Image (cartoon, rainbow, N blue to C red; front, side, top):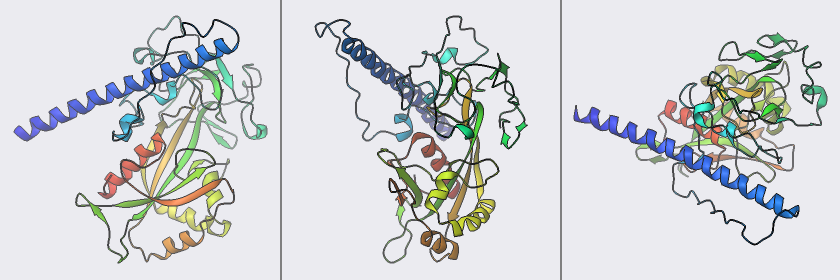
Length: 346
């Protein structure tokens, strides 16, 4: 009984810490947005340097739980409201979202003043994405909640609503309309292979920490990005392998990796709390664990021999898995699920 009470207390305190961390992230994002607004106004000649409020700098997150630092946990649907999808500053542009508090995220909740901007990025691969702009006529030919030509616009979470000709994010409001920087209105399906092996010492023994075996995971990084990522992502219509994975594998190994995927274990399928999500476009993913328990595994050796970056700005490596791994937030959550599945240290 004492053990049960202690477990309940720990769970409760963890939930409180999560909520506080989420609030802290929202406050930090608000401060960043206010700083940007003040600077933009000052640079445009509005106001003067005198009397400009000083915004407190964000504190470094050294030593904290990485999932709390991320401000969100893309866990199973219904565990929490999306947070990354409400970051005030949309990635790679100056667009600001309409602020959405937690209690106003569900579409079922009335939010009379809600008036989010519309943003759709003008991308180079115009033939591979849905039309640009907010005109509904070119979008009227899209078949939502169905297989639309080569695209599957169905959601893992069932039928989503379509309002005024545009699909609604099944997880609620994000503060931004349009398709943002994503390719399609509605669900944008991705695949995230989580490729792992045991971390070993020079004599071949499996390394351990806190009794548990330690993992290494295959990760990639693009250009100036601060974070490493799992080698997955979007796929071309009708293709099985993600584009990013093809960029780090030699073509002659693609068919072999497809077989590895079919033998892997699915660890997650559903919505991803991604900062690129909008009210009308969002990411859903399937995460598949591919684990090599034996260092002498023939397929592991073949995989290592076929790793190759076709892009000079892309790096690839095996990274030790622990809570401080420099991985983007959503991928950390997936990786932790894999570690738990394998009984490994995280």
